[in-house]
Image (cartoon, rainbow, N blue to C red):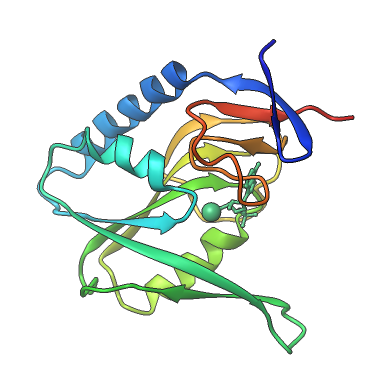
Amino acid sequence: MKQITVKDKVFEISIPHEKILKQVHILAKKINHDLKGQNPLFICVLNGSFIFAADLLKKINIDCGISFIKLASYQGTSSTGDVKTLVGLDGDIKNRVVVIIEDIVDTGNTIVALVNQLSAYNPKDIKIATLLYKPDAYDKNIKIDYIALKVPNDFLVGYGLDYDGLGRNLESIYSLVSD
Ligand code: IMP
Ligand code: MG
């Protein structure tokens, strides 16, 4: 089993690049079919989704727009704790079909925050496309429309995902080896 070290932890290969690309291309086909004629706006959530978004969007062959946002998290003073704020949404999404492009849906907290904030701009519909989905961790009601790969509840790195700022540039996805 191919192992690598990222910072101070050992990871082993989990999903090879070829398998990721195959699933990403299947997803693009589905989206092309479903959203033809709707001129969707793809909203890539930085930083994690940048490689997935690039590979996916190269295979999208319908009219569409592409935009980027970042989520800033901070500790609120209220008991709700973690509050996430949208940074960088430009362009009008009113009456537009938007497709959120995420790297991974884990607990779903990020998706809930995103959908709530985007809803305030009255888009026609909000769809969610994610590279990875952890069914054992997700406990929200929002439907995840497009999933490239379902993964177990392990910590992953590579293909956009980082461990402490490192590893986003890895071509394949690696899983933490527990010690
Ligand atoms: P959620 O809000 O719990 O769904 O988590 C979403 C965010 O946590 C993702 O967008 C990632 O930035 C980060 N994350 C969750 N799981 C992993 C992982 O296994 N590796 C790296 N980052 C992760
Ligand atoms: Mg993320």
